[in-house]
Length: 151
Image: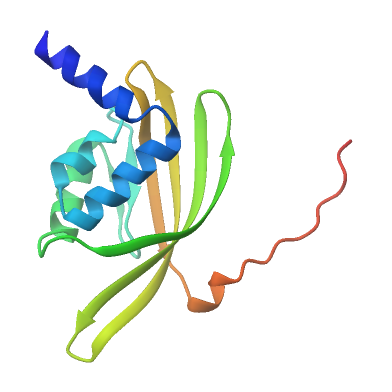
């Protein structure tokens, strides 16, 4: 019964795909793998690709990947802009992430292009995919083509 209450509380905290995404980035910033994994759907087909990394499938592989990424603590990662496509049960967010790290050469900034996919379930919105690719600073300025008028 306690497990059901905990899941219900998590679902309430992730009432929207935006809530889930915010919890994901906060967990990355804090280096909290347990919290990070709580945003993922409980499905063996969930998938994650880190920049220049292999496809990780299933919660165990995803956890191991994030444990490696966060082995030195939290990340200075900030979603800079997000484009959203959502339905009642699925959301796809295209995110430009700004990542900063202090290296021997001082503060370094990198950009990552990520796609986060969420589904709505009885447990609230959960992540089912995170795919990240290296980006470039000039991608801060989005190129948007005017599409044809549909109606």
